[in-house]
Length: 116
Image 1 (cartoon, rainbow, N blue to C red):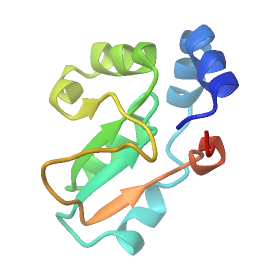
Image 2 (image 1 turned 180 degrees about the vertical axis):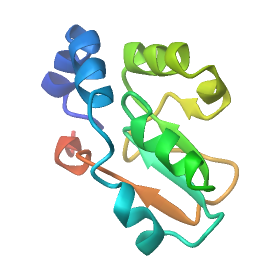
Image 3 (image 1 turned 180 degrees about the horizontal axis):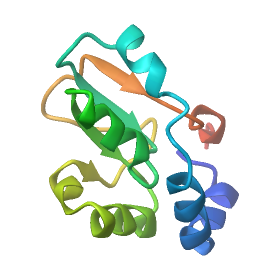
């Protein structure tokens, strides 16, 4: 379960958060080749604006994302329509998939998981 105050903040500030994320390159970019084998199927949990998801795809990974905030998912797809089949609603620990992933990216996410 995501912590409610954080989720509410993101919902209320979608445009600001989205613009901030998209204004800088992914700080994780250099670590992808160290963390994931080439062509791996990777899940970006809390994918936000889709910035890291797009970077993973550009590096050749079979990447997907889950994001609990509807507005961030919509903005991501509006900016990059090819993400429409790659971003889904979801959050930790309730992520569900019919196929396994080779790796998981949780950038600035784990601190927002609460026990309920």
